[in-house]
Image (cartoon, rainbow, N blue to C red; front, top):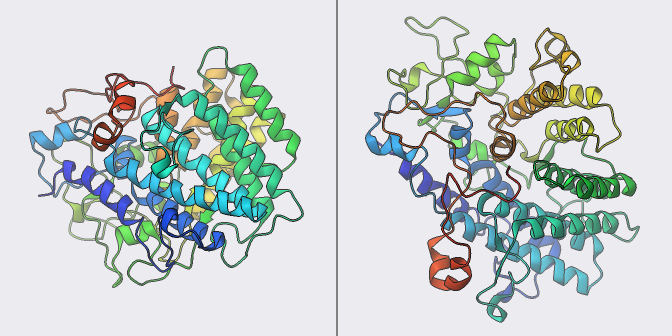
Length: 491
């Protein structure tokens, strides 16, 4: 049997594997590839980013109640404890992110030297995505002195708050560059937005809005957030209205499949992800609240003795008596569409629901009701589950924003729908919303009798490699604990 500890090890392996050269044959190390064309380097870098955005956070789908282990796997004391308590040291994650960032940094510098403004802007935007996620996982990380190679072998750790502020400025600069008439990208080499500057600018604005809303629970931060959001509004680019998905030409060949599809199926079309199954929590919640999306997040259990058509069954994390895998639901047709589906980085649903929260808090001059409904419909559209009109008009304060009367009710409604939209697509963001707001309040905790800490971790631990190569700067961060050491934006 495969224990959960192995799964956490595989997370690092998947991410590191994503850094290998593939059908974009570009050297990952900019120090030994100084003549590489920026458009080719960034194409490979974005492909790598998409790979680990879509496959490296299986543990977060478990923590957030989207997936749970199959009942085919017996649970031991090690398994029960590892759900939350194994040493989630981010060796592989840390290395993968900084290697990815090296490529973006190379693109930014090489493009600036040749006045290729489109690629400067794209690199700044992708660096902001990666650095912000490093902060979300580790808090303080090397930033201002990072990516300098042998010129700075022991970079200092910058405060997470300072990094976030710098990233907001960088994203603003990126939008300004995208809006230049001479900022030209290649429609064929740009595997993200096909050289569409407007969509790139909207992506940068939406990412910036995400980073600003992340800081809403910090006392005294409202004025800064408002000022930065005013800058977003002033640049006129707007926010994403369609899913931001990467596609380098995914196909049914080894190493070329959509990463989530490749995580689940082999090239012969056989489902191979036997360990993970639907979480019963999601199925029960959806059925209770008339949410049809569970039929798209998850697949029907195959009809058989005692299993009628239209059966959806999940498992309970740490629970006893879970049904075996063959009697439970796998990933569904809304998340596993095809081998060539886009790898989503930031969804239209998230974009609209971020705007809804910003409006609720008084930061953004848009109708919270309108963008809320747009966000829920965008989630339905992505999954292929039809119209959301009946869902958002029922007498339910978790689905119908218009009947919520207090700030707390409205925020809980927005975050619930944000949480649902992240299911099996972008669980990293659901984890961050939970850490920031503890919403949804009923996200299930493991029922394992072996677990001694009944809480979802706040963060990953720093990698062991840092103690060997950057020990003094690492030591300055103090003692770190999964459950008590907070990210700077947490209350």
